[in-house]
Image 1: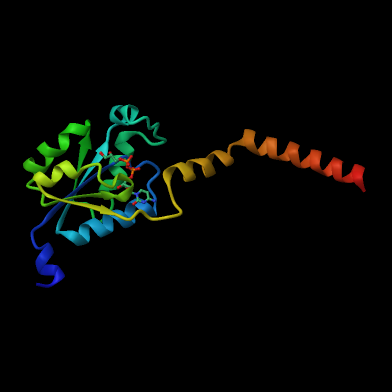
Image 2: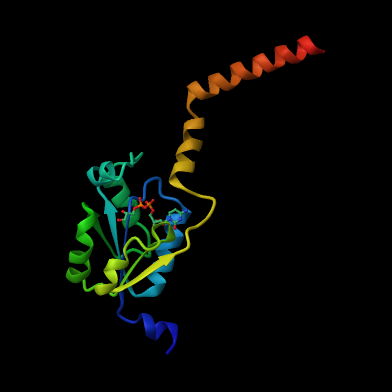
Length: 160
Ligand code: C2G
C-alpha cells in the first residue's frame, strides 16, 4: 500500500505553544500533514502556558492567527489543560497523535486511543534562542556593548 493510501482520510493532532513561530514549528507541521489529510493543532492558551512555566512573547490570539495561516493546518483549537487530549482525540476522531521528540514517551498513554508518534526536532532553532537574539537588539544591551568596547579600546591603548 503506497504512502498516499496509508494516509487516506487520517486525522493527525498535535499540541504546542508555537511562540515566535519559526521553521522548526513549520517543518514539524508539514511532516504531520504528510501523515494524513487533516491536521489539527491545539495551541496552548496563555493561562496554560503559565502552568507550563512558559512566558510567551506573543499572546494566544496572535499565536493562533499565525498557526492558522500555515497551509498544512486545517483546524486550530485551544489547549487549556494537559487532560484534554483524550477528549480531543475522541471528539475529532483522531488517528494519530504526534509531537516533537523532546516529549519522547510523555504521551504513550494515548496509545490506547490512537497511534502515537514522536518526531525529531529541527536542530539549531528554538523560540528561546530567537528570544535571546531579539533581546540582544535591546538598546540597553547595545549601550552596554559600546561601553565594554570603549573600555577594551582604552586598555589596548594603555598596553600599546
Ligand atoms: N519543535 C520542533 N523543532 C524545534 C522547536 C520545536 O520540532 N526546533 C516542535 C516541538 O517538538 C513541538 C512543537 O514544535 O512538537 C511546538 O513546540 P513548542 O511550542 O515548544 O511546544 P511545547 O511548549 O513543547 O508544548 O501538551 C504538549 C505541549 O503543549 C507542547
